[in-house]
Image (cartoon, rainbow, N blue to C red; front, side):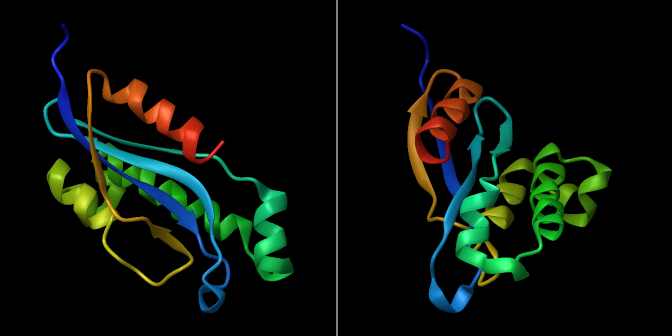
Length: 128
């Protein structure tokens, strides 16, 4: 039987109008310490986001914010000071509570054998 590894994930949400608390799931960020894994996956449903956010929603700015998530997950110099932190610290920073247009859900745990496969499955279930 393959080894099971603890993982943690959060759903990345876009909240176009924070005061209305309506959101659209746009991605998943997943961390698995045992596999040295921290990645995120995104998909934007522009029509749905426009319906929630109206014509004032800046999709280019939204893309830039989500790309920052990706750079931080990669842990390279391009991720800025946060990208230089250890993998666990980067995950905790990405999933910290915030009241901006891009937010994350609570962190949820689970067990997996392959973190990349689990990320793909969660993305299909929660975003696609």
